[in-house]
Image (tube, rainbow, N blue to C red; front, side, top):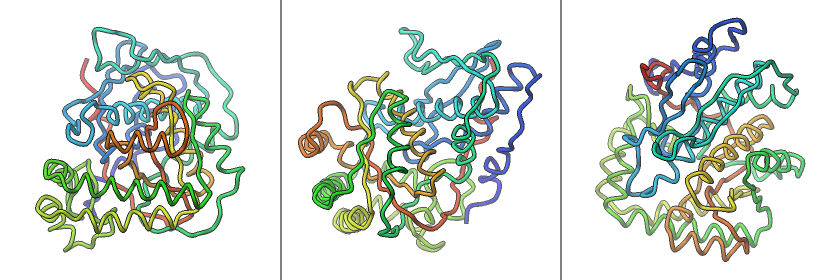
Length: 344
């Protein structure tokens, strides 16, 4: 298991808010929860800056994944997820917030400006979404075949729609089989590329690592010894066939798959997709549903086109999710508030 210090941010997320405090004190309280937001490879590619009564969210492109994500699409989606966590925290604490997306054309790293508004009245569901933050993390293990109710799936879809995206849930066997084939094909194509393998290996860590980002071996089912040699194996060998078989089985063994779509395929749309993703993930977590990513077909351009054709939709598929009921999985390391908050 990772060293406790790398998991500290999970313990530091306490349900306290300085309602009469300064703007900076309020932002710091909210960021304790925001650092737990989802991101590709657990890269956490964001930083924040307080400017008076405004919080700025900036992309940290030093954490980019140029091989798997050459356009920074998933990086910006990750930033959108962090932004949604900002909003979820403020809403829970009864504080309205105003958000300006990508407010400076000449500064493409500035993802959003958040300004504190007046007092607000959160709903019971708002509190449930916030309470789901500490328990939300990807579950890459097999799940039960138990059906997920349409009520639960509908709540997740509604969250996505509120943020300008739509979540297509797939429960028919024919749809899941066809998408599982594309997932397996994506595994084989990606892992045949040594540049992809080298990049992936940089973000897979030993179970004993104290690093505050990336994916520990135990998240991928590796014991302590296997986690020590895992990055070397990933870098050196094309394990695409084995990974393809495993991921195909995970997809077919799940009661539902889901594809997150946006109407456009632009940085602003990616930022909306990230907010929609985070809202959907919190909704599913609040309802006890485990989730993991199977994004391979939307990361390979020719397969992304096949996803569109397969599902018969216009727009841009951004994220593919696997849904089901499963066991609780360990937490992943996180950067601390002081690691992501820039000095003005």
